[in-house]
Amino acid sequence: MQRLPAGLMVRAISRSFFDRDVDDVARALIGATLSVNGVGGLIVETESYDVADPASHSYGGRRTARNQAMFGAPGAAYVYRSYGIHWCFNIVCRPGHAVLIRALEPTEGIPRMQGRRHMKDIHLLCAGPGRLCEALAITGTLNGASTLKAPFHLSPRADAPQVCVGPRIGITKAAAALRRFGVENCRYVSRPFRK
DNA sequence: CGATAGATCGGCT
DNA sequence: GCCGATCTATCGC
Image (tube, rainbow, N blue to C red):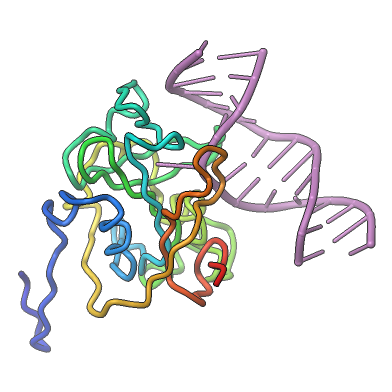
């Protein structure tokens, strides 16, 4: 716990936050603040993956060189390269279970993000897993690192926003599973949620 | 707008 | 070899 001059309390997210059902974590992360070296914003879109999920890199519980971070401690980062070009950032819950962070509403270090992304439009800075990683400079060097300490900073949401659910994006297997969570009518998500 | 092609890496069969 | 938890540019309507 950290006491602010205004008397507000800021809790830091700790390991136990992630040591529970992965869908619960994906939902609870909506509205939380994520930053890397002071650059980041509010999480507005997540997806959950686990060992029973054909779309998951951890499907069947098989451990490989790529997915080993997905079996790390609760709170560990799982960062992998997507389509040979982009990076995608997940936070591990229980072993083999992880939440893909898909979009942020930028609040901290916006000029840095704009420079890294070579664009000004705030709504496109972190709207998608690859864009978010570029904006926050998340790369494979952070794979396996704990998100519970520097350079990461995670703090829980103060008020629970209205969270909506839908099918995941950009996958071919188990595409119908309702494991995408996000803020309804939010301009910062990678794609709108259908009502 | 919606659809599509191309970029480009690494894990896996 | 093949294909993917993506993004961007560039088509066509």
